[in-house]
Length: 147
Image (cartoon, rainbow, N blue to C red):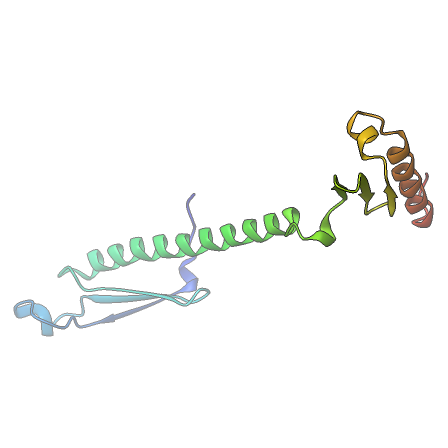
């Protein structure tokens, strides 16, 4: 994935490099600071003696940081969408509860409880499915759609 950075979104500051560096350190504006205005990311470089090399290096670092921020944002969006789809698994989100000690099946959507767990586990789903279909038809009629 590559990211395009609009030059109008950048503020480029040029200043004199600090620290040891020889004769040209206090006479030439070779250090570069680039600010990406939309994200507020700031990158500075004063490694080279040439302003052009420093600017190219700073742009490379800026591009990678902005890309990393965009990737983190996309990952965060995907994670939140996934959490919304999967749910928390709490009792209130369950569709059906099977209680083996009491031989009970409860379908929480249809609001039906059957004390026939053995027959349902063996494959006789008619009573359960009839209740679920009745509930689905009632929901469709209430919403104004076809049953």
